[in-house]
Amino acid sequence: MSVKKAKAKKSKEVVIDIKELHKWYDSFHALKNVNLQVTKGEKIVVCGPSGSGKSTLIRCVNALEQFQQGSISVGGVEIKDDIKSINAVRAQAGMCFQHFNLFPHLTVLENCTLAPIWVKKMPKKQAEEIAMKLLERVKIPNEANKFPGQLSGGQQQRVAIARSLCMNPDIMLFDEPTSALDPEMISEVLDVMVDLAEQGMTMICVTHEMGFARRVADRVIFMDHGEILEQNDPETFFKNPKNDRAKEFLSQILGH
Amino acid sequence: MNKLQYKVGEHPNLPAPKTQGGIFKAIRNNLFSTWYDSIVTIILIYLLLSYLPMALDWLFFSADFFVDKRSQCTSGGACWGVITARFPQYLYGFYPPELYWRPNLASLLLLVALAPILYSKILYRKYFLMFSITYPLIAFWLLWGGFGLVPVESEKMGGLLLTLTLGVMGIALSLPIGILLALGRRSKMPAIRLFSTMFIELIRGVPMITLLFMATVLLPLFLPSDVIIDQLIRVIFIIVIFASAYMAEVIRGGLQSIRKGQYEASDVMGLSYWQSMSLIILPQALKISIPGIVNSFISLFKDTTLVIIVGMFDLLGVGRAALSNREWIGLANEVYMFIAIVFFVFCYLMSRYSLHLERRLSRSYK
Image (cartoon, rainbow over all chains, first blue to last red):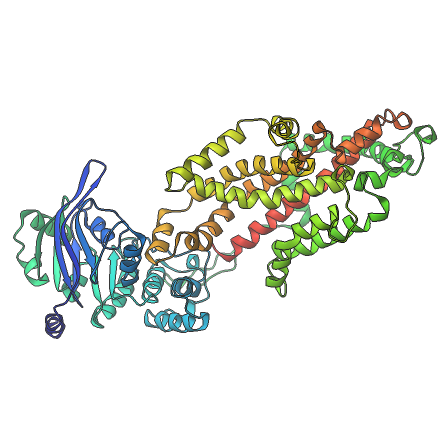
């Protein structure tokens, strides 16, 4: 852990810079004055009760949601209302979803090679080589020619991670990657994410897996009602949360 | 039955019990499972036995197949002469007989053009598909002539040739236009959305006969007098826009069943709108819409008979013309039965193919 932190400190380059972000869904104020800087290689875990705005926040980071006030820049590119800036941001940030969102009509391998071939114009053979390497890294090279519907949830989520990695992103966003999984499959996905973290990927994870947060996170962020209420290193956050709502939240999820 | 006992935790996988007990059990289960099932079965068998011989007798055994006029039909069965004596007319309408090779060749090439679309496991499919795309132009050239071939006026086309021309053109063009309209109606751009919605609602809200009249009677009034658009082209145009309005709604239904996550995943990966539509969304949406799409195709194919209203002689038109002939008067049963059978064969083929396609696609993924 200390080695990782030292690395993060050495390169203090800010890759995600969120400033005074506000978002409304119609009249509902979903994000309220959110400020967050993520440096290169940093791992952030965002937690909070459901409806607290944590998913909305990371979906804003790659422009899946529009925001009304404030600014977000990713790798020096500010998200504006034009396709160009949005694509430039999405090229840097890969994303994994709660429900995997694999393409059910394509094989695992095709899922992985689709974007490299069509977006990056990579030759098919090269894309397949890269995809196979990444499928090995998430430990499912043998399923390459199956369809997503033939795989277990945990395998599907690992394919989704490999698919994002095929675009060679600098940042990975995880939106509750394990909350749709059966309990016995959670660890295989978390293992892959830990492996990714150890190799220095910048990560923002919305998750309730506190074991994962303890092991990997440089910073835990607690959100409720659209605000960041507390952010701290995991040890301090779990042992000694300052915010009352954070205390309550932790007692609820760690209590049982 | 002696039940074997297994230790807890050591129960082996046993073969599944046999549910099918051969053909006799199937007959008993399906036809005689209850007393009222049995009664219905017996009544149906009785009706079949008493009427089937009569029907076959009328259709085949006491029928006259090759006669020149009705008065020669003496055996008491069907008088198929009304079909056979002018069979070429049912096929080609008034197309010049010395040029029959052209529609023949066009239909042969139609099969070649269809093969790579219908079946994915064809060698050199890519090259065949290129041919399929150019096929409408080739067919147009073969049927109408010009560019080295003797021109044939579209009034000369009729019978099955006309029915198939209208049907194939309608099907081939209404699908892509329907897809574009469906996408347009869900577009984020207000102008495109408004146009697509209005187009669909206007066309759907008017009977096709009205549209056909408008195209043949009204449209020429609005065009400059030196602009003459061939009647067949106008009719095809109407059939295409009418069918594509329906097609659009069928496909929109399919599009709506695709989960938001699919759009988001393709957005996040940086796919452009057209890439995500053609690679991710449409393949899934079209698969879901297959029953509806084929339904529209079948109803389009049958709706082509409406062109007799504007004076064209499709298969049905040729049949009606034969009936109004003094020599064949009163043979409506034979004529309509023949036409019904021809339509049924084509529609049934489409329906069977769609089932085959559904099965093929659902095998590849769940």
